[in-house]
Image 1 (cartoon, rainbow, N blue to C red):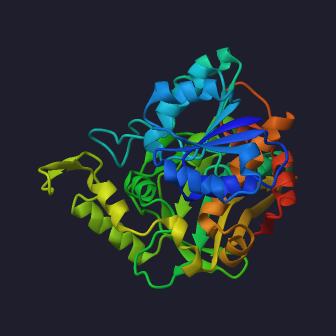
Image 2 (image 1 turned 90 degrees about the horizontal axis):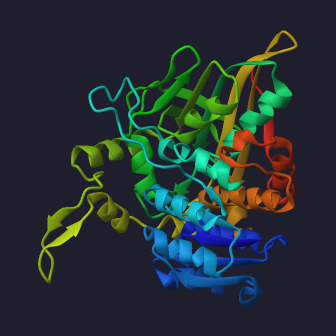
Length: 407
């Protein structure tokens, strides 16, 4: 399999370190707008000259991405950029006739007059509008294949296939006890993406109502996370699983809640109140005259790069899917989960826990696609494909998952 990886940030670099240990990959072109970042990711790998190469590439330039896919004879495009670049990369892969995998879906837009009651443009709508063209091409666009979304959706499929006859609710629950020494505010993942998903209206799905929205940070609940993390307050956040799971699985309700903490929420609210979450460019003075910049990009530039935090980070991160329903006529409730200890991921891969946990899942998916264990056509979410091969291979990668009976 020949892969064009677009994005050599924390997650993209972790992808290269994981895939370098697997034999299925023939060649990976590591591309980034900053060529030095792509070069650094490649230079750190064993056998880099044979299986890895670096390329400068603008992810917003659809024609350039298509050209790179053709020239490098790629079978698949793996998107490790932020959601702004989903659609040009998605369209470039379709035009080049290759498969596509991403970890976050096309952006949403709130309802114009009722943002906290009704959906406007939903996450992934722009991608699913092209599902017919993807199916006709005979290629697969596997969307939302990170950890959340991604592994969380695989867990939902496993629960539906193996653990339940009927499902009342599927609730993705994410929590951690990570701390970063020396920083009062240092998000462990892209602040651009974090702002997008946390300040947009969260989406909830109910079978008799469909998709609808609520206020950011609504419906707080305390969830007890495994492996020593413990109780964490979780709140509603906009996330792809709620838009993906109901397309393939039968559940009466689907939610996503994230353990953010009061201090983190307060900072996000302050950014919003000051307009610093905005993506539209504003004019500011510069040494050589006025400069047009996005406030959100300025915030991201002022914060430490999440990829650099691993040495100062301690604790664990947990991604998982809580499911309740019935099996054999009896009520059942389980939590399927995946925990990564930052000390382990730094020691084994040199990547901090959150970016490593995100990166390992698309690599597992690539290997399943390369062997034919996963196959299909059109725009598919992870829950559209069999869960057991994925979970078995994830364990083979040395990162096992867990199942906890609740109650």
